[in-house]
Length: 569
Image (cartoon, rainbow, N blue to C red; front, side, top):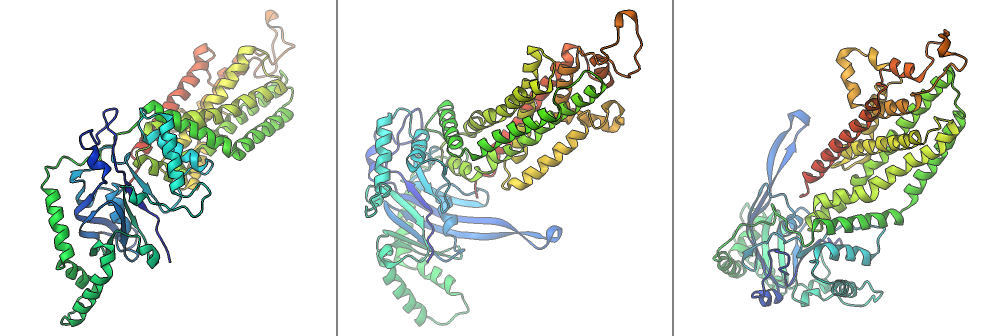
């Protein structure tokens, strides 16, 4: 037997705080008695492709056809075979289906679902979409902090959390019973082939097959109904019609259908307002409150799963020591020019490729983000900036600091304090820019490997136009514009400007006596001029400005991809 644990909970009351639409003081009593959810003429079609690639055709497939029903306080079961439309109906009732291809009305107590419907209802999916590094209590605290109004004090929130833990038997009391349906809540769920001991707990039964309604009414009367249906079908003249269609026709002619339609018609007589459940979401908490809790949870997740962070720090220290050993004690001679150019190029490209791990920031938590967003936990902006503050900023800052502190003195770079911090700042800016590009590519992706492949190919092309592998002044004009999109180029140019300016690579040469030198390059200024790098102060800082602009552009792209990500199935 298989059992889908997808459930929708309609709370027994709504709080009207902070201007949120919901229950007022006058109708609080009505809400406390339980919510009645009704659905009227629900039809749902999806477009599917058939055939091969370019020869394929797009056709509409009917998932649900004219479904009507009422879900009252209690256990409301939706049964049916695989592909019968159970999950689709459940998602529609919970406002989790793409409204395109959907028609019909879903009402709560005779009115449309309010804008804060997703904050006052709950949805339990079949798979786990919780933060694995947090405890059950911490996950519930996160939900309570974002979905309950800020006017509710911490004591009351904790009391609710304790109550839920006790009701679900998560306090190590294995035999405790869950009786939420007896506390005025309307619970709707889909389930496959329940045991009779479970079936007896159902208050209402909705049976679907091939997108059609076979039965909708009290669960305890279902057995008698189908006995009557079986006799009627057996006695009726044989027709070339499927059993499913005949059962659907029998239900339409039954008293259950007539009683249900009469009640549904009464509900439709109530003046209707615009249903805002799909196109508008009202949140129980402010942007900054959500930002604080998302950041707090991300920090806990980072501390609870430190393997990746520790490994990154260890690898960074190891690489810094290796680089420092290979290029140890750079000299001020022609060989020193080559070694300086080589090590600065390595530091820049290493910051780019080490930022590839940032692609997992949104991809791994995609399902969790979608579930929490459509459940009304937080805004997209709160989640986006929360992840940046708690994960991206600290994890991309450390490699630049570690590399600078270890390699700068081992290499014997320019002994100037400002040059030391400029190098550190430059490496951090390169890492942030590369990470922002990673997020722009990965946001909305479902597979990490695809995003990683695209990012790696992009960095390889950027390396070509960084300024070491080819002199950028010699690139043909119709390709030279590509250098402006190279992240390593800006970091490499800034590091060269910071290091080479003021260095003398011909120590035996006396410039005051106009001595001649047999070397092609004697000063750092000559090297920079040969590379086409402006030696003025703006020649240094223009690279950081360019990197900052790229960060803003990439983060904007990443945010927009998250904002317009398809969040409904």
